Length: 312
Image (cartoon, rainbow, N blue to C red):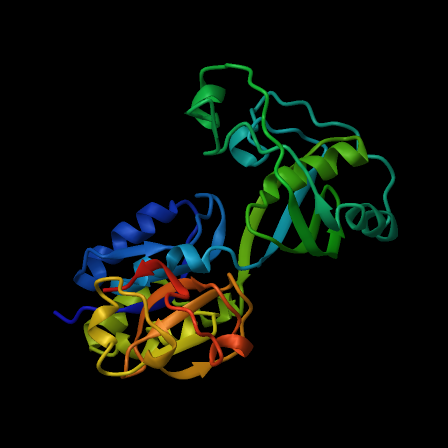
């Protein structure tokens, strides 16, 4: 069976964990080396970036990309988990104040920018070495940490009370269900996230993603490779290419010198992430440079590249 190296855009279905999606893909594709760049809750749907083969080693460098969501928020009820899982049958709905679309838009804009919400009690964040959700299930009260995030854009799509539908673009680490809860508290009637779809990660959109059924079909038809994006096309970093003589040294982590560099693609400053390519143009490592691209050719020192990950 063919083994794949690169990324695959997958549409996660409702009710399945991100881990379960990866497990299914291992069976469908027939290879073990598969991962993803960012978890979606089981009750959320939408875009997952799947890393195949050597690309599992670049997952950490893709997880920092901004993300966009379409969220359905139900006003008038509070949830212990901030989503529909924490709603109980005997939960008493709260009275929703009179709202207009303009009022909702103004409230949403209060959350735009850099904010420091507390992470949900039911989350995988560790406090004193323990997962918050495990402590929450035991009923243990704990001070939840704050995390600085950035809401790049938040806009009302429509209002159909008790539901509010909005678009959110945000930085890594944003819990949309926590945002929904905070919006409900700001309005004064409580709220929870009743539905969520991730529509974008970086430059990749849900429209480009394949369902599990489609991936299976393309795999069986022998054309899945057409949908796998090569590592060289997905890394958002400038790169340095070394000559053929130096190329074998990348795998052993040997530091290149200026004389080993045959091409510079893109510009970079000191300490920024840079991809290191072999003589064929294949990305073989990710690292940081001691100097910027403008000063590289005049650099008289020895080692200037520090390896972070070798993709062998």
